[in-house]
Length: 110
Image 1 (cartoon, rainbow, N blue to C red):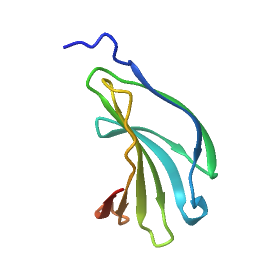
Image 2 (cartoon, rainbow, N blue to C red):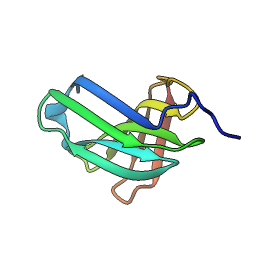
Image 3 (cartoon, rainbow, N blue to C red):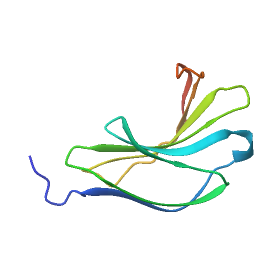
C-alpha cells in the first residue's frame, strides 16, 4: 500500500541541550532507521545545533538517541524521538544503561 502524503525524509533542526554533558565522554546523537544506525553526530558542548535530514521510505521508522559514557565506563543511551514514515513523530523519553560491551543493565521507560 502506497502512502501519497507520507514524508520522504526525516528532518530534525534546532539547538539541542544535553544536560550534565561534563559528566560524560564520547557524547553523540545517533540516528537509526528500522533499528539500524545510519549516522551519528559528535556532541562536544551542552548546546549543539543540529540540522539533519535522512531519506526514508514508506514503513520506515527513525529513532534518535543521545549516548554517552560515564566515568565508570557505563554507556547511557537516552531515547529522544521516534518517527515512522506514516506519522509525525512521538517523543517518549527513556534511558538504557549498558556495560562497556553493550549488555543492557537497566532500562527505564520514563
